[in-house]
Length: 160
Length: 353
Image (cartoon, rainbow over all chains, first blue to last red; front, side, top):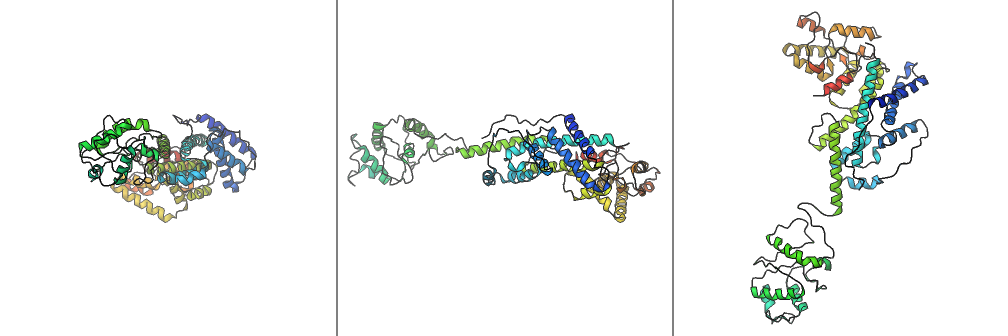
């Protein structure tokens, strides 16, 4: 089996790291000068949301987490940018197709919940269930951190 | 009977000669036993290749590890057999069960701890006999568990998954469910909720009222009261005035009997009460439209005051409560705190117990 981690490491950086990344992405967006025409509200919203996710992925550890890699790759594909990822050591190389066939018999309750999770968490399609749950824990922590940052921004910027 | 066939020397040529003699041929003796008995085993590895009449499908190795127990009542015959066995192997304490009818202990076959009483004694002897015999022994299984590597791997895997689920349980609010299925559902809903929160927050200061309501109404999600709060805003944006007045009347009716139930009704709809003065202050300060600020909710959606929180100022409160100010009754999380912050925060606090 894979390496036995006694304690799973799901630490995320502090809020300020997320804040810095998000603000940088926002200022980049502003440079593009999109915010004049009100017709493109949807477009603006989508850009901001995408910027939020990308900055979150960068803040959370860049390419050292599976979900952040998948997120960044997905985002880069949309921009037709070529992203280079550092070669990481292939520690676990399960082929998911062979695993899936057998995994349907293994605790089907857990497995179809894992299917739904795979659709939600970026990059979940290639992960085994235990790895998926690890990634989900880290993803949840990062998401809540990002939400706090955005909430603070909105609070701070809204007029009293 | 077994005894008689063993001991009568005249039935066939392959019978053993007499129980008293110790010089009988081992091969013949064992042949006799195997041809007549339905026992599929032999204990002696001094006689490895044995006729396989009664035990098809067993290989030699497995035979070597099995112990045959003789259900003999006659002590003398037992002694004869004992002598025969002891000549080739050592059986220091061979326990003979009387009238036991051939309980066979099979090390190979059983993965569960044997429940037969004689098995324990014979395992002791089996241990001593089998020790020189082992060429391939399996790990003795613990009670109720299998030994093959697949199930061990399976067990390990399940332990890892359970460990991670426990870690996830602390992250997710309302994670005190003991049921695995409901816990997983909670996790999934929480992830959806967080993603929806990010989406909403990215709209808050930028999107217009229309886009906010349209985006929210198409969003799924069922996490607690938060989504109902958001759904409330989309509803009021699209609602006609009739349903709003109906809600108002409903709330007024509820308020006559019990204030708490009225607040709960409002909370369930994702609405809350606020003093009229505050509502007017907010709407006039931030709203671009010229709508009547007493019409609930939609006017405030676009401004910094939350897209998710609909304010419902009930005009009838004035009359029923006889108070010109529309005074609020404090009730925990349901009320606006007077800040213009986005009700996602309040929605989150609403969902907490």
